[in-house]
Length: 252
Ligand SMILES: C/C=C/C(=O)SCCNC(=O)CCNC(=O)[C@H](O)C(C)(C)COP(=O)(O)OP(=O)(O)OC[C@H]1O[C@@H](n2cnc3c(N)ncnc32)[C@H](O)[C@@H]1OP(=O)(O)O
Image (cartoon, rainbow, N blue to C red; front, side, top):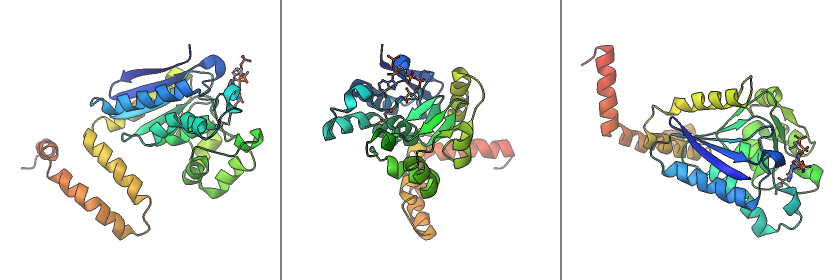
């Protein structure tokens, strides 16, 4: 049965698009469930990071082709609802890409902060070859992720990147050898890097990063960081951690 599966692994929420027989193609129902699963994870105070993946062999084959011909603005926006929830998630997000990420499936991968690829990952913009204009913010996300030249190669020239090419382009942060379990284990281990940080601080810092990425001047970034930085120094969480650190290094 096509469904979104959600589980907790330590402080990571693992959200899986599960419809392997149809290569995890996004229906309206799956997109709706995906958005709900991301919202659930954000509401769960035990969750510090969100991992999205697809049941092998594909990551996500994009929009459901059987319904795409009938889709108009509302339908398209409904398909995008799922990966846009990933894109606006306040917690750090990882896409564990084990197979083909095509069209809206590439968007789902791009919506995450970090992509970890398995050896069979393939990143395929596809839209134009299908005769459809890119949507869901792909032209924006892809240029931000890998720059205009590489984004143009994928979008206008149809270049498909395998795992290694994606890593070289900076589209994949890491490539992990092995099967889907190994990929997921690596994604969970990576997510553990966010487990020790205070949850609210993760969220504030992610918000700051989004903002400073839009700034031109270094000095404006210093200004943007100073208020949340002072707030963090005034927090009981910092006082406790500082005391622990001082005790460990032998200070007073
Ligand atoms: C607004 C958004 C627009 C977009 O997202 S544009 C992009 C739309 N997506 C596509 O064009 C991708 C189409 N699919 C593929 O290219 C391939 O598949 C894959 C590379 C993803 C995987 O290849 P392989 O592993 O060889 O699988 P297989 O034999 O092609 O397909 C297996 C079954 O999966 C169904 N399927 C695949 N993609 C979709 C889809 N996007 N929507 C609906 N069904 C899909 C097929 O039909 C078939 O089904 P059956 O076994 O019954 O013949």
